[in-house]
Amino acid sequence: MNRLWSRLGARTAAVALLSAGVVGGFQLGDDRDQGQHLLETAGVEQVALRAPQVHPMQEQATEYQEKLRDAAVAEAAAERKRREEAAVASRNAARAAAAELAEAKAEAEAKAKAAAEKPYDGPIPASCAEFTGNRQIGCAEMLNAGFEIDEFPCLDKLFTKESGWNHQARNPSTGAYGIPQALPGSKMASAGDDWETNPKTQIRWGLGYIEGRYQTPCNAWAYLQRVGWY
Image (tube, rainbow, N blue to C red; front, side, top):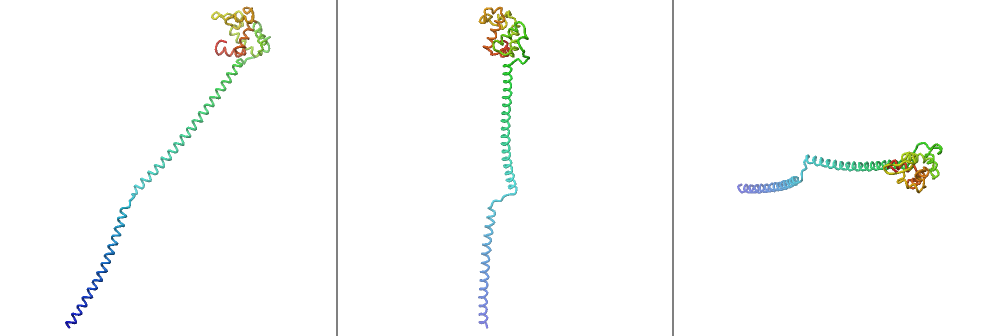
């Protein structure tokens, strides 16, 4: 009996040891698996920790900066457009002002030319018979010199201002003499020796002087009005 129980005890112990080994092996395997899982999980967490984290406030700040940049770009473009439009408007205004000035200048020159060509716009005599004395002689001599009757009002004003049609008029300051106030009076000798006493001789000389220097009596009258002498 003792021997039988000894054998049974030995077998039982062997089975117990084998079972313990098997269980230990399973546990060791589980421990290794759990350890590997822990390592892998730790690696993921470390990777997650290393990844950059963007704070919501930072995202809002970045979005706000982008909006500011876009607004600045838009404002700069609008300012360039305003400046370009202002430059165009300024050039157009300058052109309009220059054109207006040129038009006004041309109009003034045209009026001045018309006034120079015909400074007298009053009534025109129908004939020299409307005048008497030296005026009638002057009108007739003017027509003989080739001028039209509409020039006589200018000649009349010119000689009236110079001498009042007085063929003996003498300027005490300058010595100018006669109806046309020749200076000196002896110049009129080219029209006749009787220049001192004959109004016709004086008028002929005066008409020749006017034609040579001013072309017409009205031009001479216009010049006298501007300068004070002719």
